[in-house]
Image (cartoon, rainbow, N blue to C red):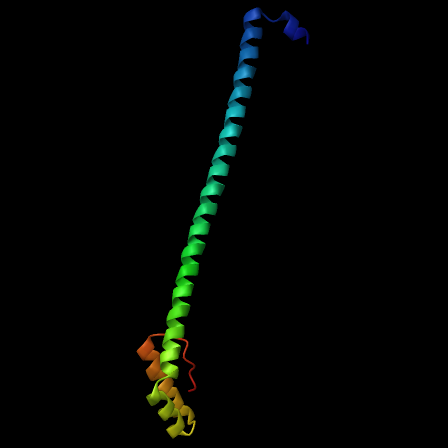
Length: 113
């Protein structure tokens, strides 16, 4: 610490203020980083919640549509007649399934062929 005692007052003041400015600069950078990361996490969390709600709504809508289509198919006399008359022939049932699959526009009808 001999150099400190021998240095001029101007140098001591300069070093003290430089250290103070450096500390304040680092503190400001740290606080800015903390606030930005919190904001980003909150924004992402909010967007994920909204996306989840939209996805749940879409799934619920599709489930409802499939249930209605399934109920319509279950009550369709022509479908019942085709199943009975075919004697459960796999090729006929596959053809009927493809036909109804195209009519209701879904991919969930089982394919027997």
